[in-house]
Image (cartoon, rainbow over all chains, first blue to last red; front, side, top):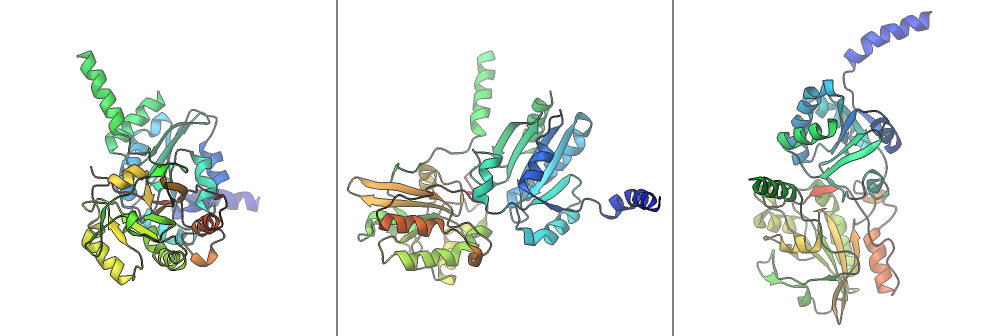
Length: 158
Length: 200
């Protein structure tokens, strides 16, 4: 009973106290949480704090996440900073007031996992991949404008 | 009108793609004439004793390029005397990152005491021909009677963050294999890097 009460209390307190804390994620965890057999469109954006074009396009993804929220669209930011930079990434995400889900990928040497995400991907960022119904529906290595991002999302949610 | 709409749709589609073709391992690689940080034009053929070249597309501002500067210097020191000198090329459009301009290259080469040429691919024609996509991006080419042949494309090693924790030195292994007359394996690797800043 005490434990249930404690859990109840935590469920009220925890989300507000720790809003959008960036956590590390393995490749398997990332793929199982975004390549799902449901009709939600997962918009997965790979970025890093040091990447100028990545940081420039983040507000477009934030905007899309809000704008299309009622249409089963979920933006997921995946930082490719080094795992030891987790605190700095977390601070950055808080400073930028990012509301979308944000992770830091901890998957070892990139040569072993880039192809598992996308064979066409050479490894430069920003890179964005869209999943729906358990499948990749779009990939781009390079940046977006707000108009481009919105129009891709619109065509994929239909 | 329909035709026009179709045409503009095609153009829109095409314009969203970046140059991606480039070389694969086994392809012939073109030589070039690019300006070095000593203000002189330089070609691969100028390095007359070379058996091949470690061509590194890199730049001044990218954190990954900076992390690899010492390792690129070490590669040149180790392999120039064995016939595989480093030739670094900066293809970035400086209007997108001011420090990537030719003056910035001179400063960087001086500060880090580059022992290798650092060339400016101002027109981006060479990066486009080779298919370089990120910095740093390495192409090892072997010099032969029939021209230069690409033998390896990819990363320098498997740990950009910490040189001491590297497990696989891709470029060293590739050059060692070439010097020993063996097949290069792996001959293609990927790494996270900065996008090459293409002119808009």
